[in-house]
Length: 233
Image 1 (tube, rainbow, N blue to C red):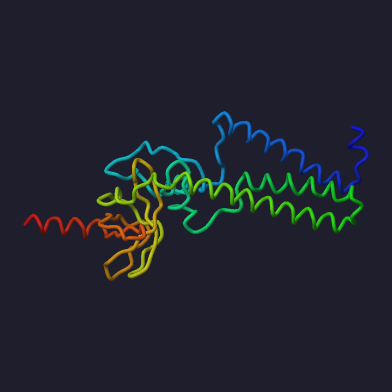
Image 2 (cartoon, rainbow, N blue to C red; image 1 turned 180 degrees about the vertical axis):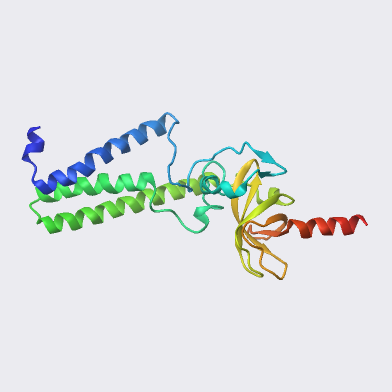
């Protein structure tokens, strides 16, 4: 208590943020060591731990529209992979881990800055800078780790022939995203189409091919079924 009483009012504010954030950070580390940590971003990636897909029928969940959270957590990567998910668009800065790091590092930096006889304004600025650097660093570490973990686990070619659902509209000669089950995981993967109309969000599709850079080529399910009937005739 003597230490607390010796703090200035601003230092107490900094410490109020730093102490609980530090406790949470330590708990996260301990849980990670014993295998119980669960990345909460992820929403999720990046999100982001893998949720096994249990309700799978004909290659897709009963209701893909209700699996956005699962897609955020496992958008095409194994065990946490971001490449096919949010990581495909970039790392996610604001996750539980990174925000905790912001308050822990920023808070203690603010306390230390005042001990260094810096002005209150300088202490606040330095605290924000240090916290922001910590936030970015943690986000980058998680993103890099997930990409490394993902690499080589998901084989894109296994998606060919699978049914899925459009998550982001796929324009003609453009790219969107589809939700599809690959290797028993719900993945959100970049996709394109060869038809001359947009394939809209929520539309059922079939993966017919894959490009050299790992983008799925899809077409509407009804169009694919029509082609199959014509071939049989």
